[in-house]
Image (cartoon, rainbow, N blue to C red):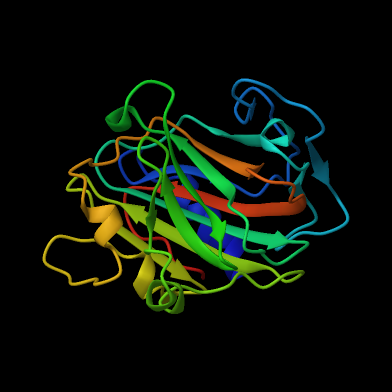
Length: 236
């Protein structure tokens, strides 16, 4: 009840504070939340699911196929300028393997045309990937891997991240900071050497939720109670 009221309150905030709140309780508005599959689309699908939800009765289901062309996403271009906070409740049908995959992708003009800032998994943990130079956050060394977290399967998880205009990245899983997924001026992260070798400061134009695999891994993700804002959202 409190979560529903909080989402409703956020929806009434001015655009500078509350950009997007979506729980799909009124269905899937495909004009506001279009699908996204650059270059090709073979085998993946997006649907409104009434069988499972974090709150209410509906969620968005993304059934991602294996291989790059099995990718499919759904999302919005309504993102704030300046600080961007994205909070989603999500559920994955499988845990990550060692293969590289993506479950959130963002067109990023700071990297160049048709390049993306990606959030996904590799080496069984959560990680960021910068498409232009294939850098990862954290470094995928044993020490770097240990500073991130795995994404549990078949349970709803609260995932939130922050992109700052100064190039900062912060990440929380269930309101706990993920140290390895942090890159901020003045904050030491010895496992971000690969990421910090570039001066690129992300400038995203949209946020898309779904699945992309660079090997054969397939997975199904559900997304619910999404908030995109210019201030921290949190899980409650």
